[in-house]
Image 1 (cartoon, rainbow, N blue to C red):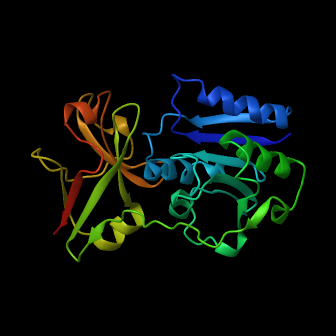
Image 2 (image 1 turned 30 degrees about the horizontal axis):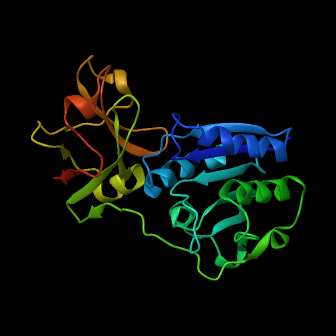
Length: 254
């Protein structure tokens, strides 16, 4: 049984997800389809990459990951299929995959065939069907000659400071920042620190989990994906602290 995951910006209000699933189940009736999310902000490949990067390798080897974000279809758009680390990936050539797999070799990426005569759903489905039937990828398309690459947003670091960025606000209003624990500790070097956010009082210690602080208090810790998270225990940091995506968090060391 094949496992197919879906990350899209299609939303749940319209029929687009159902249409894609109908195509996929017709081509692979025994497949298990897993909805990672269909609520990616429209056209936001950075957000789509964030979800894919933090989930794809939690699935069994051989899983087919479809990233349908900013998947417009037109004469100049191409859809890709490739294999990496024993996982399969299908989606548009818009830079999203480069944000997830920076080391991917262009020679291993294929443009799905027959894109000029099929619609979007058929193109994706044909690739998935070929994978589930065991077809070599070179039979599903031709090697791409122009793999789109994007640069991910990285923290700005100096010897005594880190300026990081909020890259995601989750369902609970917790804000996730593009800073890993490895980078934090490398710059920290055992020193004290102050975390500044908006005009609030700075945070001077890390927690291990939400309930390390009292209900309603702010906490900061490195979460299950090893990224810095700022939250309010049993509260919504996004709303109560007016913290939004793309805003800067500053950390000073002393």
